[in-house]
Amino acid sequence: MSPPPTLSVAVVGWGMAGPAVALALARQGHRVTAFERVPDPQPVGAGILLQPTGMAALATLGQLAPIAERGAVIEHLRGLSHRGRVVMDLSYADLAPGLFGLGMHRGVIFQVLDAAARGAGVQVRTGVEVAQAHPEGPRWRLSDGAQDLGAFHLVLVADGARSTLRGQVPLRKSVRPYPWGALWRVHPDPDGTFPPTLHQVYRDTRQMLGFLPTGLGPTGTVPQVSLFWSVRLAELDAVRRGGLSAWREQVLALDPRAALLLEGLSDLDELLVAPYLDVTMPRRFALTPGGGARGGLAFLGDAAHAMSPQLGQGTNLALLDAVALAAQVEARPGDLPAALAAWDAERSPHLRYYQLASRWLTPVFQSRLSMIGPLRDLLFAPLARVPWLRRRMLDSLAGVRTGVFSTLPLPGLPAAPVPLALPPPHKVTTS
Image (cartoon, rainbow, N blue to C red; front, top):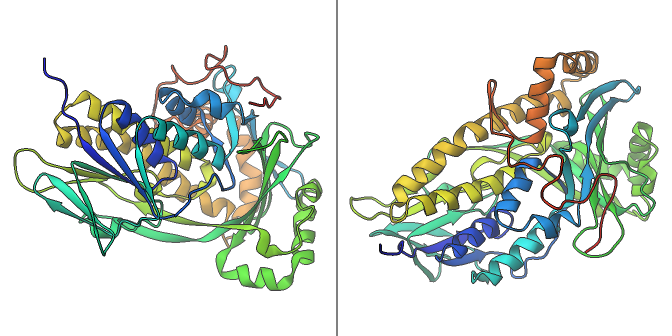
């Protein structure tokens, strides 16, 4: 039996999905070259919530342990109104005993995947922005607009929500900015003031404050917590003109514990601004024209399906895109059209559900529709006590729901007894 053909693969973008898919394909023996426009990519960013699905994807790549050891176990999602009324109280363990999320600094995941991909032989070219892609025979030829970057059997576009190449490929797409975003800050929490909970406080739909324990970060041995504050982007300049003192007063009115995370902050410009895009691509791959051998180009992660982070799924969906694509390429050696079609069909229900759910939920928490807030505060907690609805809320939180009546299988996800050498609840371990 002849060995499977070796593909030349280009990965455009080196954030989350990029190094994950590059690592998986390099281990299969393919020649992988990655292009990243940032000259010196670093493990930076704010806090993210790694769901059981994302953990399962990292376990498939063999990289979960070094990432998990720097994370913070998250057991609950808890949301309160500004008057202290419980709006949401969801526990991962109610879905499966021992199940949990991981609060992470985004840079930890990048750092581990970047090192593993380079170690697997991936060539990473930084300071290169891929501006053009066009079919040439059975391959896709890439260019930065001035010089040729080579031709590849498979091009995987993972350059984020503001993808350069997305507009170049004749695929149907919709790209819409959300009017709301968030201000972020990561701060040490050496005394463990914040419990293993994603905690949020709401004042109708116009103010939202959140705390997410994010573990140890890329360096150091002191646990960190991310603070995030909802902001209407059109009003961001006005917020800044109002000054730090006025903004701080609003934050502390929702939860005085935020004072710890605001220590040392001297100017609002020191906060990270996170805008959101809603990106929809009904089909996420294209093929070179003609019969016979054909090259493929596919969009992964936020380049294909960016959404509001209301459900905390972006990183997890990107990681699942990566491992699923590599698995389909391995299962169908020499047949890229079949592999990409199977991958797109496999991922579509999952992505469609979370895009629709995020689109529906976001105005309930971030909008000018302030009359929704009291109704949400009144109804969410009683509805969550209805077993059928609670199960769907829990499935949605854990990242496994693919539709109103369908889910990804739970077997293989981290559950008690924890099979993946993850840190126990209430503890953060050091490497």
